[in-house]
Image 1 (spheres, rainbow, N blue to C red):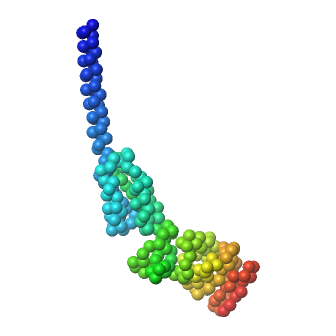
Image 2: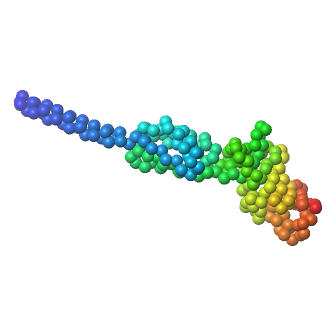
Length: 223
């Protein structure tokens, strides 16, 4: 009886050592999956490095359990970025591919000039881009993006816009590069633009300067 108990105890003792060894091996392999490299691409070298530096706190975190939401918050705080993709390359690398936002206009706010991005954010105007249209007034960025979408869906193109004027009544005036000036209504903007586009093709545009469509179902043409 004592011999059987002794054999059982010895058996469990070696089993415990064996299982412990397996667990240690697993944990040792698991430790190899710490993040050791973060690659950022899609912007210029300086901005790629700035983003990579802002993520330095994630180095030596386990790649399996790293909090993706925390990484996303940091990336989303960069106004240059339109969208991005995070890829985990095992065992220890994060690849972050970003797409730069497109600049569509300039606007003055609080005595400073900003660039409007298609990501809905305002960027500091470090280098003035004279090719972008200037916005007068104080529209919300969402309203600017909506107008751009409407113009691009019409027969006109936003690339042809020189200046934009926004009014508190939520109405826009548009000046194009060819000096055609359109006073838009508050509603049916796309339909109005298409009507004016057709009119503009059928009349002597050298004399026409202003299309006034502020009154419903009426377009007044002035030279």
